[in-house]
Amino acid sequence: MSIFMKAKGAAGDLAAASKRQAQRGKLELELRRLESKVNSEKDAIGPLVYPLLEAGTLQVDLIEVQDHMMTISELSSEIAERRAEMEALGQAQAGEEERPTEAM
Image 1 (cartoon, rainbow, N blue to C red):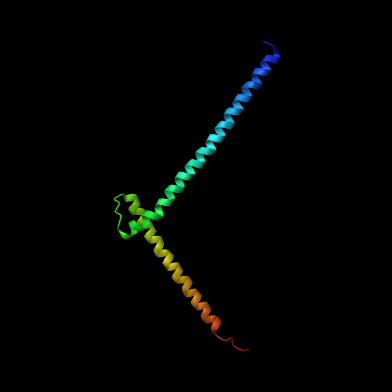
Image 2: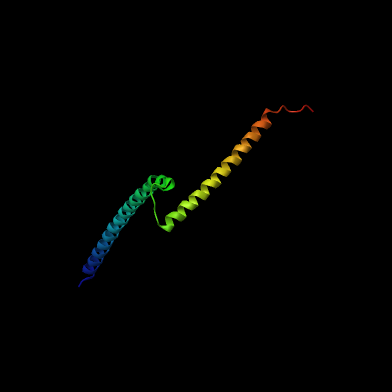
């Protein structure tokens, strides 16, 4: 086999490998896109189901769901506390702005 034939065969092998890699890259991108869509759909279910769980309309016996509901409840309490603190700070600041400044 001549050197030219060997080089031509090697170039053909490289081209085929490059083509496979390009196809693999396209498939990986498509796979990520589809997985992202699935995750988006799963995320969309939560806001629809949560109010039913919170109201007790939907009962789920999974301990994981109950744990998440407890965590959400605790976090919601913390949020309410922080909002109350912010409200108190806002009222205190408004009270300070209303007081006339003393002349020196």
